[in-house]
Image (cartoon, rainbow, N blue to C red; front, side, top):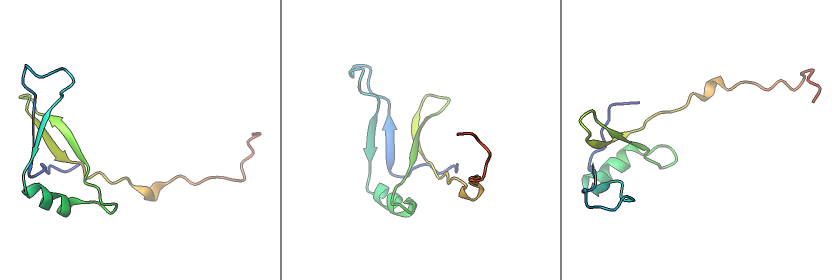
Length: 83
């Protein structure tokens, strides 16, 4: 995973008066649109993680994990398994 913070997206913890089901307040500015266009994967998605710093501040970070598909295990169709 990279160290890319999501540009144009801001997240805050809700106020103490907010109902329990409110988990966060999220805001986006216009630069977020450019960020989405620049970071979309081959399927058109931009995956992000919502993280919390040691100080308790919430933030978004780009999830750029790509699974390694080159090491897919092969299937042995000639096995001697009884089922």
